Length: 366
Image (tube, rainbow, N blue to C red):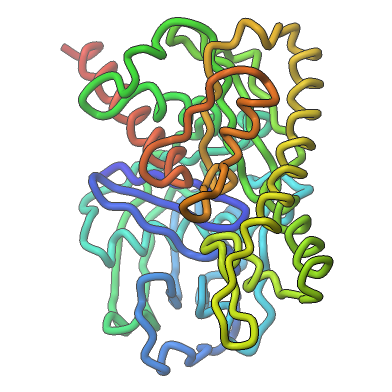
């Protein structure tokens, strides 16, 4: 069974067949169970487990965590130990926490009953990391024995599975595939001709690349060190300046998603503050894109459209002008936001890549 994974900076996202899910990025590895699961939470974004493994996995980064109690998502956040989070200044494939996140997502899909048999993983990574990731993530291959300690109604469950293959793909490549294709054919036939700029807006970085006449341009891929966290920081300043409120990160995320805040028992629309924050984010991203065009030798006037995905592409509520519209205005080009949930574009693109790979392999073997 093919499982696809996006090791995002703010969420771990995964999919198998028609099913998708996500879990938080924090991980705790402890010598005893957290017992947070006994509080009766829904297991959907929570997991606690122990594991052993054999094969390459037993000699790689996971070897230090065998027989420990691994908490992921809300369980990690609410336990007594301090969670470990992925670091922004290091390659994803060089961080042990990301191997635990990848394993946790396989377990989540198994618990949901959406995968059977041997596991083939497809993992999306930043373009700059692709060669290192293809080597390092091979250390996920192995035979696993899992004891699920906590997860709502599913605690005390035993799982066994084999991870037999790991394929790493550039995030920009699969995001572009997700824009152009669905499992049944072209998504936007009118975009199969012309030059398109793919912009995948993560929490802390933004991946960009070019597609020309339906073909991905390998040499155009780049990771910009700017992301949606900049918008959140700008919103924090705006909320203090306009309302004298110093909000937590959780509160800022809620305000960004809903466009409202409770003040004095009243529900207050704060689109003015959100708009100012997004204007700042768009202006800074515009500067980075102009530098990217110069480095890539691209004349922005030749662009047919901008294709935006990722959490930074989300609109918070009716009346909110999204990042796509703001960038389209600055660059004087059409902006297209990924349909449905823009945060899942990378995961769905991985599924399309896996489908294309399977089709090519079938043709070679026929």
